Length: 112
Length: 114
Image (cartoon, rainbow over all chains, first blue to last red; front, side, top):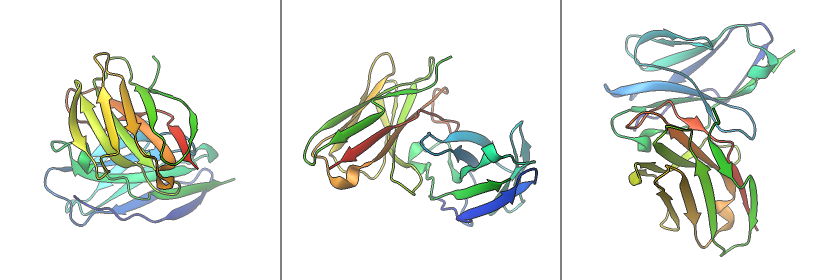
């Protein structure tokens, strides 16, 4: 089970780009990297998933270097509504939900 | 389309009692997973069910059990409640036939054990 390390918290001003880095030194060959967002009193929401290089969707971008030992979630031009906890998950899709380890996440606070 | 629904929203129980939490997945989703989230921590995996069969189990005692019904809804049961069982219980469903990291979570049931 690949463990992840993220900053506990981050602050950013509205309109700025935010980059949250996750370390996963023990990532295995079959592991994917997934990010979730969670607002208070709500369930987590899937943001993005990737295996290598760069993935982009309408919400965020995910950058994964060649050695895959870390990944960076990039949120462009954040707004107050992006204040939430962001979780980085690493695991093998073939072995089931036992590998869906959320950790403590990164609490992002967007400041006006 | 309706999202994942859970009931009840809030629940208060006494130590030693039993509780049943319910979850209805998104229409067409056949996989349901349960998570426990203690305040200040990330969700912790409890069970995954697919087509009424248990596909995965986290590190929880036997006091925790679950089942999935033919309509893919699910129940989580917890017996002999302890104070430490106080948490937000989340249900998630996914659309693929197997396990998927793109899971859709419900709003959760907040259980308080006194």
